[in-house]
Length: 146
Length: 146
Length: 146
Image 1 (cartoon, rainbow over the protein chains, first blue to last red):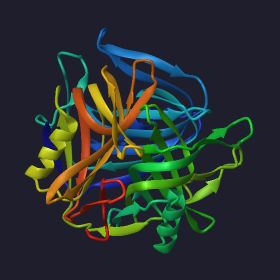
Image 2 (cartoon, rainbow over the protein chains, first blue to last red):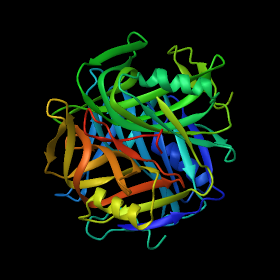
Image 3 (spheres, one colour):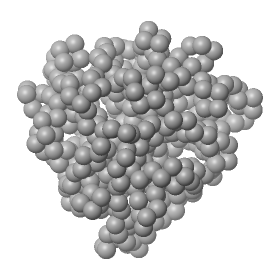
């Protein structure tokens, strides 16, 4: 495990509320780029009317897409913001709840919020950098280089 | 998406530990009212011996109740505190784990903690206001009015 | 419910990134002991190639083990650090996502990270103490004694 302490001065906390029809990742990345957020973590709850969940398939070294075309509660959404190739990128995982209380989950690829998604995001003045892991092709947070 | 920065001075963090038999939402709302918390977010883990999970059903524009009458781990509980009609209200979503490791989840309606629920709650000196969304009848955080 | 306010000065936030093959609990406890962390909370996302999930079984007053021997997304990992018998101990619950988007979850017993686990941990200068609950034999956070 690698570790890095973040600055505890000059951080900011935001409440971000997505509207009906918003794609959560697209809105969060636009926010991060507009505000030049280079290191942040967040949690969120709310609901989607449609969502595509990713599962990283080691056989093909790529994401398999599991699509959930129904109204679901967003039971948990946990994520972070880090910098890849000079641009803030958002990484989030979600668990969603169906009509009968059963759940699905994955890496958040696409979503359509309905009626709301309430995000609490804490930014620090640091920069977390992602570098590509040669084995998987995934961009992972690299605290040694951050 | 609407955004609002929260004050980063004067915030407080609390550890709240529910006892056997406590209803989590009722205890958290009593805490928020006692301490006049008008904006907060929290996470929690623990276990319930009984829980009622909500799913917002678009057909009837109301919550469907999924009851889980068994001992379950509280795998994630993410929530926030905001003000509705002048009173702090708690909104939380949970994922719970059953004996065989399968999960259920939803909007947290009623619960009976057993043996513990460990909550870490961060309050800010701001006020987040909820207003009723006319389409759904739900009270949603309205950062424009907060 | 019992409550305790934590100090809001002198806290630290860390980003901890587990490597391929790391056991998450073992790494987090080693970190907490090395840095004498006596009160903290964290969230994490990432993936495991193997994980053992606990369910507290009231019949035997001990954890039942549910083993998931496959690559899974770590959809949520929420936990805390508190002191038991003078040593920092880590308590975490996880929800993991399988190839088809279904989920499993439980108390995190053992894990093998692959390829990453991104943890954001916030420490406070306080000490949270655990004491053994005589009914269950579990060490629970005891804010009255902390």
